[in-house]
Image (tube, rainbow, N blue to C red; front, side):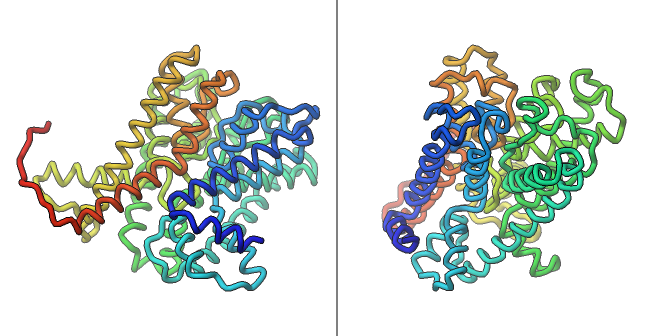
Length: 452
């Protein structure tokens, strides 16, 4: 049955198949969450809210219209957890697990589709890569769960503590941001652990490892002396964003009475570091988002928009796209036509693709912000924060998510889906058009225009 499903999916053009898979997962999840058994009080939440939650989980976003612990039953929480894991690692990665367990040969068409879903341009060693992804992901999540159990078992008991540790480890590694801390207070996330080094550094480590990308893992396994350009850009961009973000959040909110004023110096550092990491599409928070200064909110929006790295569990325009943009700007400022990094030259197709992704992302966020400003009774800064968070699959909110109108929920649903799948798919389609255009015999005369 699994083989038949995969073959039917692959009959579609690959990019349409990716959209189809995510839509199918979201729909199945919404149907399951709409069942009375998925809700604590046994009353259906309504299909729109179920669809919103399923989209947020599958697209590993973390925005929620109801508190995950207080509203959903154990069945509903497990459905959300499975959607997070499948959405984070990808349908074909999960399907490959069954194929490997059944010792079935992965067909050429399936290898092609796996390469497409992982945005991997080389089919050589794709099955080995998937095996490493599967083993590495589950191993890292297990280590994270074990570390979190040290804190959660004394607090919640053995069974509940282990369950919470597993849930939060998977949610953190997949950069989803769903939490079960509603047992303490609704929508409280990890605020009560702002001064807990074990929780802070375990969660942030899971977020960073899940957000740097599976290809970076593969490259690092091969040895740090022969790192590819992609890996170097990812690691340096990630390092710079986290360090600069931590320093700026400390500066902007260190004396803010609504967030960090009462914390000690090291606790302020942990809070700033956590905020810098979690805005990279993770969705957890240890300080109240609505209490931050305007500068911190703007900085959070910038980091959410950039997001994680290609081929990872994270969203956003991706670190490499941002890095290419910066390198291109530096090349133009220097008056050179070549964009170079670490002794290598970037191809024009990569630059065009990066600019396309950024322009589509800006257009998507701006359009959604305009719509939300019309449908929601909230300041522009609040709806803009919500829109950027949804597109970047970050899951952070200034508190308006539970009060969104139906029109607002539909807008965020589309934006979460588009942020996870749409921009990448459209960019790939445009790049294929550009590549095919190279075969066109027609070349128009060149003429200069004024810019800047």
